[in-house]
Image (tube, rainbow, N blue to C red; front, side, top):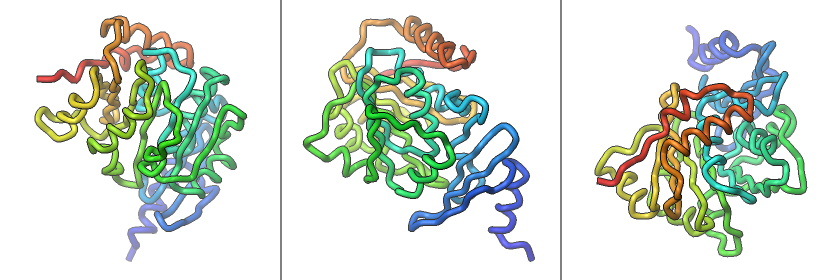
Length: 262
């Protein structure tokens, strides 16, 4: 009889090449696979947590990463916080866009950080600080600075961290943002009208946008204060940003819409 683990390992090999590293911690497995073009990070299961093009390590591959990066076009930014490292796709692209950006990165699992450094060309700079911490505990630190951008991508192997969908989390982020700042979240669905997250987003933030990416992920953009630019201007700015990164995918910027308050 074929075990579930053997089946998953076989699927992983068929879809992503050879396993070059596998470690475990109290949260589960951390698996790195390598093919001719790509290097992929997985936790348990076959879902890709991070993907890197080996010939251009700063180019974002997953559409949800591209959609998250579009937020950098919405406001001027000198400081950013990334909650959830994975293989460092977002961090590599942010650093490529602006090597002078002061960047704080929070990752729960120390082994994930070690593997990202060893296998995924994680940038090292005096402008970037990596923290091993729980995202909620980090945000509760009263001595933290304020940020222009906060990116939240909190996922385990199969599911989103429930913290990311709570009003408590939104308010913790709000308290760490400059007035012109944006919170950017990788979410699993468009918040339904009348849901707790839908209502909380509109209680906490003055402007809320979203973008549905082809994989089904939904990126939510929440502004602390209203911004002067129109939705069409934001779409144009976002598309120019993607072109700057070498990603000619204007269909993503066209999918930005208001999450309207009813």
